[in-house]
Every structure is written in structure tokens, then in C-alpha cells.
Length: 287
Image (cartoon, rainbow, N blue to C red; front, side, top):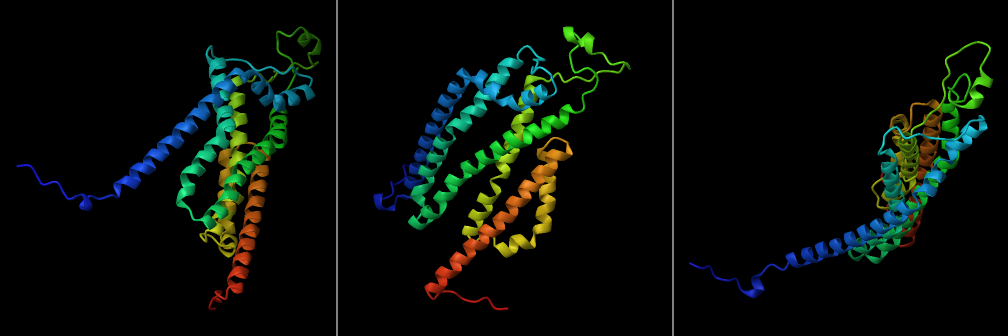
């Protein structure tokens, strides 16, 4: 026996907003994917100049030692996968503003005006701080790190098949240690440095946003400073290669950002307190 159709007024309309949200999310994801694919294809067409740019730190370190800048392909398909990796990374970096805008268009309708005004600066600051961290790693940290790594070479710093190698033989025979870097290995190491510092520079943005939302306080962040130091040490050990210089620099930078975050959260708290006092809504905490 067929069941009765419920009256129209009894049908649950709560599914309609959900379907609309899912449709909106689908639209934003499609736009983001289209932007990423277009940017990736563009980067693939110019992957050689991007690769040449990324090899500047190692080339400068090698030239300072009188060595030619050259990386090798250890596998037949390695060059292709290097081009793909460069295209993926470059495509994401190039399309990130559009992806961030699509995320904002999806989230913004559910926010109040004051919430939009509070959240929008952080949406702008996040990519800016990432690129600042990436630039810091590329122009300051990488030259220092590669200079440190290349210092472990010894003997004639020329490859055996180089015509000039025979003229530079030392008086005392020794086993030469000469850098012959893989393209994929170098790109992986460089990317790791850039991502580690780019993400580390998100710390002030994240903690300040949490302070704005009332999730953390300056007093609370200062109270867990010792645990933060331990966490930063672990991060420095995991995110960087096992050389002391890179780990110390990353620890120093991230810890400095943590202290800056405390001051930014404290400034937000003072501003919030001043506004509440002006409205007569401030209540002193009981000691």
C-alpha cells in the first residue's frame, strides 16, 4: 500500500541550504582547479627559467669555490619529473591568490560584517608572510646552508674527466670528495627549506587570529613559553637538514616570531579592553 505524501508545509526545508552550500563549494573548487591547472601549464612552459632561478644559491656557492655549476640526472625519467614538480609548485604559488579568493567567497556569506573586517586582514597577511618566509629561506638561509655542505669536499674540486683535474693534483695523494648533485635531490632539499620557513612565518598570523577570536591570550602564550621552545626545537630538527646552522637559524627565527605573536596578541587585548571600557562593559577579573 502506497504511503501518504506528507503535506507540502511539513517537508523539511533544511536540506535546501545544504544543497546550496554544496553547489557553491563545488563551484569554488572548480574555479580553483581551473586556475591551478592553467597556472601549472604556464609554469611547465617556462620550467627551465624557473629551474635556473632555483639553482642560483648552489651555483653561487660552487662558483665561489671555482667549481662549475652542474647537476646530474641519475634516472632517465628524472628530468621529466623535475619539470612536473616545478610546474606543480609554481602553479600552486601562481594560483594561490585566486584559490584564496575562492575560499573567501565561500566563507564570507556566513560571516557578519565585523567578522569579515576582522578576518580579511589575516587572509591578506597569510600569503604575504609565506612569501616573506620563502624569500628569507632562499636569499639568506640557502646560501649559508649550501656553503656549509660544500665545505666537506676535499682534494681537487674537479671531476676526474675534467682536463684541468690532472694539473691540480695535490702533493700528498688523497681520496677526492667532489659534489655531484642530483637535480631531483637538490630541488627536493630547496623546496623543503622554502616550505619550512614559509610555513613557520605563518605563526604570527595564526596566533594573532586566535587571539582575535579569544582562543589564546598573551598571558597564556607567555606561560607556555618553555613548551613552545621545546616544540620549536623539534620543528627545527624535523623541518631542516641535519646541519647545526640551519637548525639554529630556524629556531631563532621561529622563536622570534613567537615572541612577536605574544606582543601582537597583547596589543589586541589592550585594544579590546579600551573598547569595552569606553562602552562601560569592562569587568575587572577577580583576583
